[in-house]
Length: 358
Image (tube, rainbow, N blue to C red; front, side, top):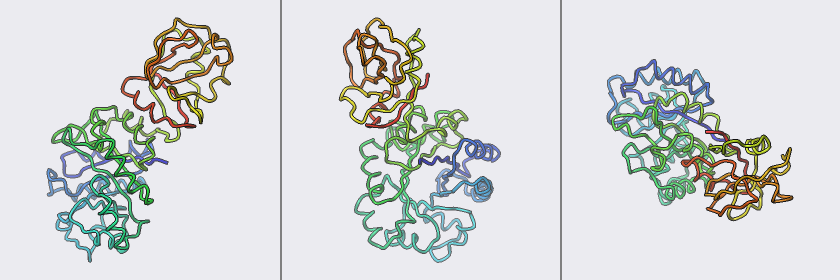
């Protein structure tokens, strides 16, 4: 199960009423986690705590779990210490993200003595540091990890490094979270989005969330930017990690049989071909004859249905993984939209998938 979260940043000039409305919107859409930071350099420290207390109280009342990014500066702001965590407990937090300034021994101590879940920075901690934390007798059941977000363009993680760092934690039974941006309302002062992955910076957040949800590498997805649009929230809220949904442009004038096959629920065969995703149940959905169409080149991302010329294969639906020549036995019934073509590679053997017009 993938949990979903939002982010709010007290002291950054966002109207409090807008933050409260946003919490309710996200809760109604199935979001259950809230991320915030208590040490953003641009935040107004004069009203940060008062604003945060109001946001936290509303979030707790709705049932959100709250993670706060803290640093030694936060301790000074709250007049707290390792020996006096009461000022932090009073904020209603569930987890503390220790971004920097804490030793492996201190982190391990916190997992055992603080009463909080302790969140590690999944983007920056390498194997040596993680092993040092675990060797200091950390309580692994109290550890979780979350990647950074990257406000400056061109600095987000590569997919390769993201996978490597995520696996460090996943292989040790530690949950992992990551951030996607909002295109509707990116956070200032740069307003360039707050993604974990650079490839997601200007991508539809639904598509970015799909890649994370179906990667098998994360347990939670957060909007890094505050006040994401209602459509963005609602779209991400209904992602199902066990079924990948692809947006397609439909070929004009499909027959009723072709349309019924296209928009049915599908599952990739457990022995798919090298060049195509093959729907296991599609031929069993056949309700009538599939007449041949004018043959078209099958590009990567084409969705096809075998026509009557393919005899007993008539009705089989496929997604093309690499460019193929036209075939008079195969009808092209749709094309996966360009920005989601890369998601085809995430459809593993036996995995469920479906299409939506878009």
